[in-house]
Length: 88
Image 1 (tube, helix red, strand yellow):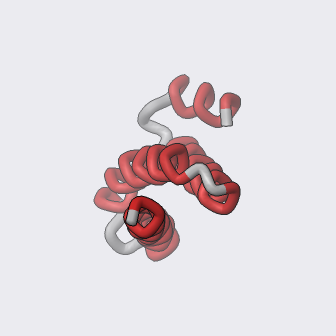
Image 2: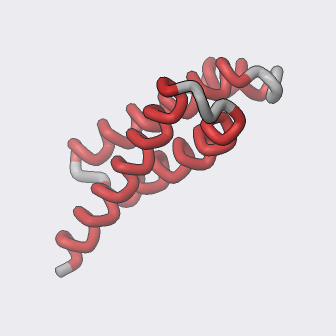
Image 3: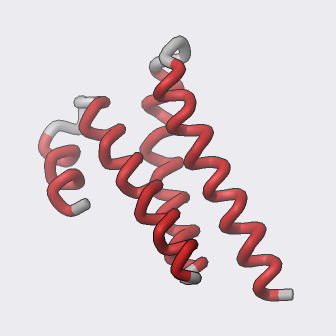
């Protein structure tokens, strides 16, 4: 994740590197959710959405980039739902 973040920071205009970072944040959030750290999972999922949304908005016809955003948004929603269930 650190290498991917450094790569994306080096060239913020590179959508491919930003996409790699967004997908890495998504995977990190999934891992954290499976391990039961819902707060960390929510933060990672939100970072993924924040990274992937502008990429998907600029490439409306690119199905893969739209799917990446949808996956991240779904993970964020599932994590928030799980946090609500855990609090109840």
